[in-house]
Length: 326
Ligand code: FUB
Image 1 (cartoon, rainbow, N blue to C red):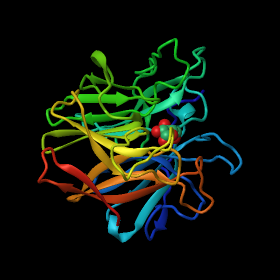
Image 2: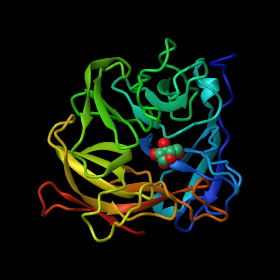
Image 3: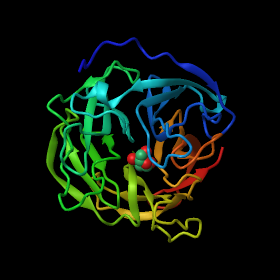
Image 4: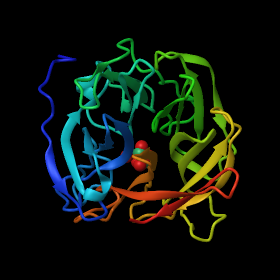
């Protein structure tokens, strides 16, 4: 396969939006939003749901990017076809461009953590997490670790998906932390500053109430926050989730590898079965990104990215997250 071919930069379309979802007309669906601030812009990396209305499966062949320099303006640049798994990693199968995240490394370059299926794996769970690198979120991207995925080990007796939904944070001291996992299993590990090499052993997190999937790690004022899709975090009256129909809950820790304490719910179940958060500060305002089935023709496998403001209750310790609808 011809990999790492120099391709022309992706061409954007200009979108005007008047609320959520950002792309509401059903021409492009978008899922698993992962926000990133770079070059004075707010980028959102998203997968692209392409399932026909009668297909109950995630048909996700590529990642796309949204970018704005002013959320209130409603103007976004949409880069529809940023990347495809099989063009990025020699070991990757086509399709299943699941929830990735782009993070700026200590070297100033951008790293994409991408959960995709391995082409030649005999494991029932084919998912693994690869890392790509670029000088700009727009690419060109190349495999940062051609030796293979950085996370691929599955517990053999479990046939369900294990190695998806990576979230990565570079701490203020330059140390790097990766968490990932679905079906109730959240693991975390420190990475070397190369953004690739695992440092020590992975930990398992068991104290985040109702953890299901979609972790998002960030730090605010010396407190670490883990936001996630929870399907049993029913302590709050606003959240009565069913098995897959998740609310977005969060916990906090004083250290990047925990211990983690459950803190509450920040977003009630949305119109899609899955819910998937990203939280970021951009130009002094905090935001939460997620997806819903609210676009024209939308559905559980035809999701669309949304964004709302997050405010903080700093009278609590640690500060509580409050979602504010724009
Ligand atoms: O988009 C595929 C999967 O759905 C993601 O990995 C989960 O987080 C859920 O959003």
